[in-house]
Length: 379
Image (tube, rainbow, N blue to C red; front, side, top):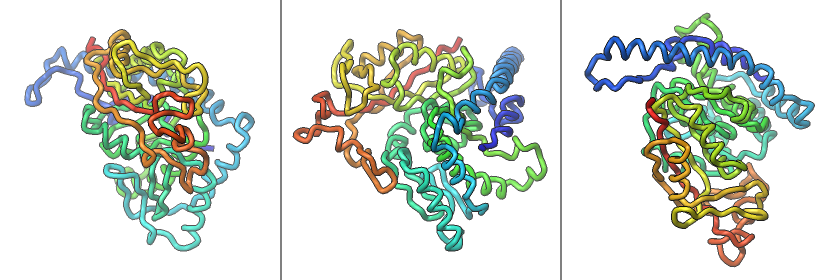
């Protein structure tokens, strides 16, 4: 079973010991914060710690339900694959410019075969790509392209506490860590994706500890990479948590029966002035235009609302966000989402009309994805 004890312990520690601090004052860069600003910051941190501590008490039961082998028949095999990974330390890793762990020469032939077999036991791999000791995991999605499109439009993540809702196998969580986020928490109810993430962390953790020998025999939570994925959905989060500097929700909104409720849930996760980064399907159109597919959309039966960009900006304003804006939009290409050796099932090409790639197989506008950024009110 995945060891969540260090994460649960880290949740109950003061921000100063988990590096989860952030500048909440309005002081200029070279201006010392006032006594009142310092007091407000300490009060805010104490409140967040109180909420995280209460959440940590609920999480063991939620985790047990999310990783229950009786509920998920294949989970036992996936966990065995995780446990079969060799205990080796990569010579390097990079999450800033890519998601790479180690090099081929770090492993002998037996270890390389063990890694390859374990990773393939978790097929399909949807978000990526990853490079693990020279094995290229060619995922269904070129998630790196999505990251490159949005990274220049968002607030800096360095030193911040981040939530990634519907994170899949955590590809973007690793890229957030590469931007020097202080703490990244992903949530996704799919146990396959959770195990895929901890396959990556198995090796990344070994490298990180080697690079920080001063941690020595410190607390287990202090010796853990500050990135984890929980097997839960957003509905399992405490109400009005207000604890994150940035919350990401990418590829989730159109799966929610009530988009307004989802936007309000996202706002409730943010600190005052925190930033939402939202990526979702949109349609061409004007303010008020929304597609509500009566049947399937691109063969998906759980697509409920696809708004125009202007409509979604209006929804964000309605839900209390400030300065909502669309920072990127483009139609998904057959190069960005496709079947591969690591995801052998149907993909985008099978979801589009054979006569016109600008339409889905049902005749709807082909998938176009927009990236939106907005802030929670400062007070």
